[in-house]
Structures are given as structure tokens and as C-alpha cells.
Length: 139
Image (cartoon, rainbow, N blue to C red; front, side, top):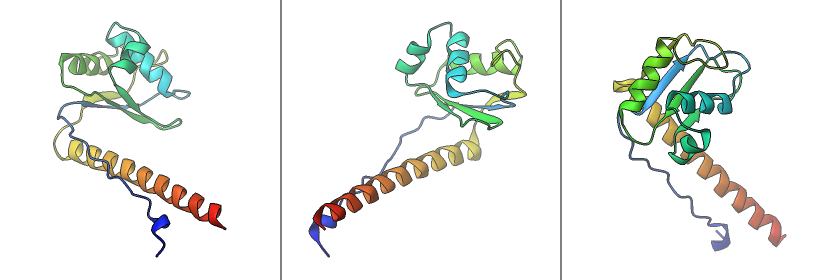
């Protein structure tokens, strides 16, 4: 075993707070993360830059029918956005979503467990890439 092959793999941990994830069902076609960020900004009566600065994250991939909003801290703003979305007061790309709710209980724990597992897999893949680059350099 060559000591140069040892690329340290960091482990991602996250001290999540309950009540900080909003699940959105019925995301309209053609939606993207930017549209979701704009919707959050409108719902909070602020700018997209401010939303990003507050570390509010949009968990969404193009073409999906569901999305999640991750807020770093609990607050009334989360329930407020959720309510506006659920009642159709806040629209996404000019359309009402099917449903919006704050995730809780086992579903919330699973959401965060999956997120942490995803981040750890990313770290593992980056470490593998570094390891293979080191090996290529020596040959």
C-alpha cells in the first residue's frame, strides 16, 4: 500500500433543525432552481441574492414534479411561504402548485439522512478522483 494513495475522505455531518424543510408537489414544467429561488424571494418580500445570502437552498432537479426548500433556521417565514404556496397565493412560474407542506417526523429524518448520505457520496467520489489523479501523475 503506497502512502501517497491515502487521500483523506472527510465525513459530512449536519446538525439539522426540525421544521426547516418545505416539500412542494406539482412543480410546473419548465421550472428550474432559479424560478424556485425567485418564488421564495417573492414570498419573503426580498431579493434572490438575499435568499441566497440567508443560505436557503432549493433541492430540485429539472423535470422533477417535486421540490424541497431547505431553510437554515426555523421561523415564521417557513410556515408563511408554505401557507402562501398551499393556498395558491404564491405561484411558481405563473402556476399554482398541487401542495406544499413542512416535512416532519420520520419523513423529515429520512430527508436529512438521504441528504447527508448524498453529501458523503460526493466527498467519497472527490477523494477517488484525487487518488486516481495522483496515480496517473506517477506513471
